[in-house]
Image (tube, rainbow, N blue to C red; front, top):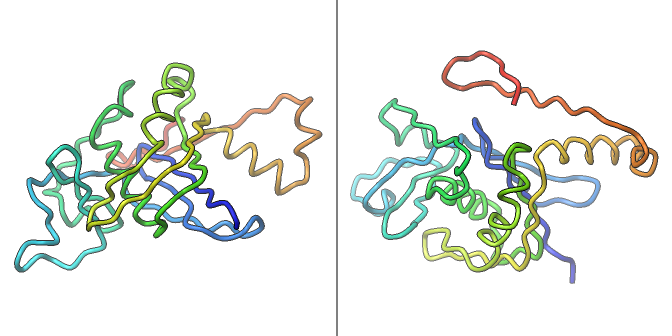
Length: 192
């Protein structure tokens, strides 16, 4: 039996995640990192708009996330990006929305990204948060057997090393990874 390995990066602009594939062909998807609060499951409402979102329940409240989440909002984009972001229900809703998008009932290893600035302080807490059973809405759950948190730039470095057959050679080299991000509210590029 092949192990189910997936990855999630809840970023400032987008939540990125893997949805399957093989070692040579990894399939990825993304949706805006925006979680719209709702007191009930919007998809259960009469006359609900048909949009590509999920209602993720967290502590009795629903957070709508997914590719069409901007249709659920009122034009106001509140961001929760701060040093305790992983402790917010919005973060958990985005991560669980990514898990639901993966269309699996269990994940043997879930790799999650953390900013370099908070990596040392948050690694253990994020791995604990992501391990276990997750209610992803719609009567579905995903069980994560093990989680591994990595500093976000490591993913780019590992991908480059793998694609260029330089994994062993780069162990003795110094590398610089530049992670530019588009600030959604301004349209200006900023270094992340």
